[in-house]
Length: 366
Ligand SMILES: Nc1ncnc2c1ncn2[C@@H]1O[C@H](COP(=O)(O)OP(=O)(O)OP(=O)(O)O)[C@@H](O)[C@H]1O
Ligand SMILES: [Mg+2]
Image 1 (cartoon, rainbow, N blue to C red):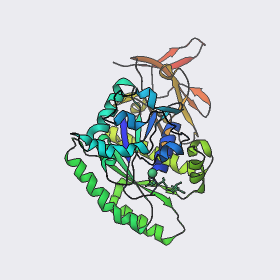
Image 2 (cartoon, helix red, strand yellow):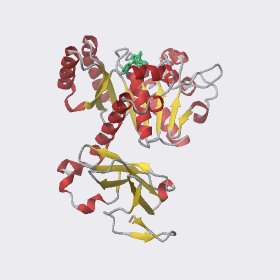
Image 3 (cartoon, protein in one colour):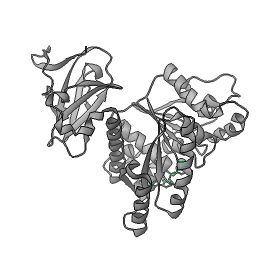
Image 4 (tube, rainbow, N blue to C red):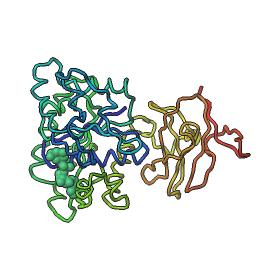
């Protein structure tokens, strides 16, 4: 379970819009995602069409030390789409500032909550935390709970001014962490027609270097409309450039994840012998790969997903398609579906006949 805080004390730089739509696009790429609204403004909650009526449990009820009976995770978490959940919030979260004030280790409460959730409710592939526009107790909790932080930056003079502050905060948080936060920066609300935006882009690139995503989120009226309609852009306008921007971000993010997990890619995957493209275990599942420069979609189906096809993600322009799948058994059958055509894996020598007179690719993990 990877936990990503979307943080920047600067207001209105696209934290909430990114939390909602980055999460929705990870889910579009078949990831199991929970988005947590850590902002008492509750914008992620209403931006995803959830109204916190009286009597409804929210994140506050899970975190508050004054709560007599803590609700179950299932009583708080709202299912939005298959594999896409929300932990909602509203202004009650403001009270935590005071309630946590008297507690030891108040900055670790969210971290403790998320490990409890993983045990009692189950793990997600990704948990995305939408932080409020300040560096108060809630953002501290997020930075201590997270593995990674994504800093959205919109092209304005004030946002450049604030970058030193958030970078300094991350450094302070890192002093008491075992592993430092992985930092990403993202340009949002970008209007390529202005020279100023280009200048800010250059400055942000110098500041963050390779931490800055190549993907840029442009200004799109549709993103405002989607939020007002209580939907992610994946639901509201899946054909739009706004959706494409956030999908590109999700794909680039997953590429970074894979580069972290698969250090041999640094050698250049073209040099890796053909056999290495067969399925193999990585840190959080089995990596499947398919090589095709011409395919426009590659999916995988097998025993592990009840033969319901799931998409692979194309990495760069190289024609390398990849997906990491959670597989619980030591043996399994699978097939790729390339542009709608079912076929065995050309890089997996083992095959087994199936009940329909054909063959499936077959894996036996040792
Ligand atoms: N790429 C975009 N194109 C057009 N409008 C956008 C874009 N990103 C965000 N917005 C709009 O800009 C406003 C601020 O965005 P958002 O709420 O995501 O920022 P925020 O950083 O979460 O704000 P806050 O600091 O108040 O939490 C919202 O009205 C949102 O709809
Ligand atoms: Mg916000």
